[in-house]
Length: 250
Image 1 (tube, helix red, strand yellow):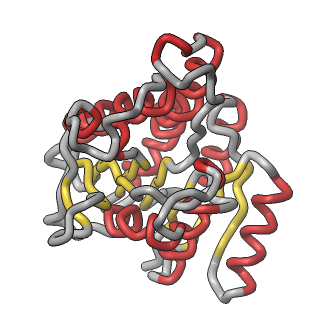
Image 2: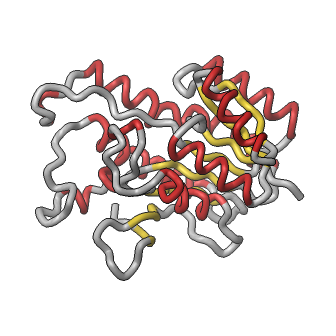
């Protein structure tokens, strides 16, 4: 039976590669994007490669857009097997990049997409996820949201100072654990994925991992077997020469 997977922010970068990775595994991929032109172009590219891809206009900060997307998916497929909450922004670089330079306007903007958008999209699609035999929800988190790593003076993330993006990813891991607790004992699994420092528009393409590499842990969590993990932060482990992928500390 063909699975159906929705990926938010799937028109480029990691999101696009997640869509491709799931399509390679036989899924019908729903390319969620707020920019219709870019979303349709990404969908056409996947279709040209022989995959079953459909464009879904979806702005995770717009409740009307979310409701319309959920209604369309329900009408077309009746159930949703995979939800990848990938859409995310870093916000503006403010002042010297330290916590005290943060403005509430920038903080709110980042949280609208990275935190509130995830909850809004997930809740809107839960009826369809529950209707699937064994749904998977993957929230694209980040190692920079790890309290353990960012407070370790030996960590690559020790110098982080700005509040918006790192704290939004910390909040996202908590959100992940709470959904995972709610669905413990059911076929639904909810996990947070760390793509690692991936070269995307988000960081001016300064990352050392490719978007395809960044997609790998997300696709793995999206296709977990019945005995797979639930409520974990899993993905690329920077500096771990023995285990490229594994569980990350909170």
